[in-house]
Length: 251
Length: 187
Image (cartoon, rainbow over all chains, first blue to last red; front, side, top):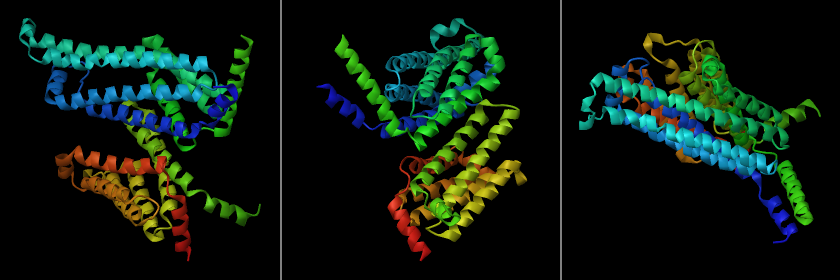
């Protein structure tokens, strides 16, 4: 395919429906991730292993629904990542790719952390080989593994911090989205990076969490309601296309 | 530009954009409320609650504007119910342990469901879903009933409402039909 035809193609593929699809998937992610918390709310009693174990066994189906919805949420975020990569490719292809990598690693760790969600069922399932432990010991182990899950979550938050920071920079460098959204995302990314020092992050989490939530919520709503500035997106995509074809000629 | 022209412009503002804004503010409020409920304690919890309520006030105004062409009186009544519900919510009033905010939201959803059903610019199934959501919220009239039906009444209410507003957000309204109904109402 020769260059003019290719550039034509790039210019034709309208980003508006794509921005809206990104927004819809993003919204579904928000809805699933928050409803998952509602299902398991109150089941884990801090510091009371026996009560937690009883709750989990009594409400096994709720717990399993929460687990499934969490996994779906992670799958949706992977889709959001792919869509964002496409959206920001015209701004800077390498940065957009790097951001996607960070997000994918975050998602992988998050998906793995759900293993700690299932661990209590193995421990409290009453298998024969576990009878060497006392009931209290098994209950304590179950609670410990549930606590490890939130520790694992703090690791993926760091990767999502890098991701948000890069997405924020990409929005700032882009011409088709308002800068304030980029600034907020970059700030939220920096805030998530505080989780490199978990004690400090736990101390500040009262402010980090709402900031991160607000930044992503506003970006999501903007994509849904306003979408991107189509003309500017195309201009930026065309500029990148020209630069690429020039470089190809020189080498 | 004279004031009259400007007023005209505002009134003519694309109904599709209004619908999209209503959907956007609805999910903003819903997610903010749920987020604060789960993750935030203390002073910021109050702030989150009030931010969510102000979002719902904007939703109510936009929805009133969207359904004015269908039936102005009913649309006004619906907005009134919504405001009463939001006032209960803002003041955290629960007379005799009843969650009156939910009950008024129920009346609101029922009326909006009827208005969607009678409108020409939205699919009728959404009206039915919205009315079901209203019935789900109306169960909050009796606490034993709520305890008996929970969490199905909650799911019914949330799914019905969210599907209606998701349609407004993603698909908007059929702008041409909306304008036809609006000009018919004016005559």
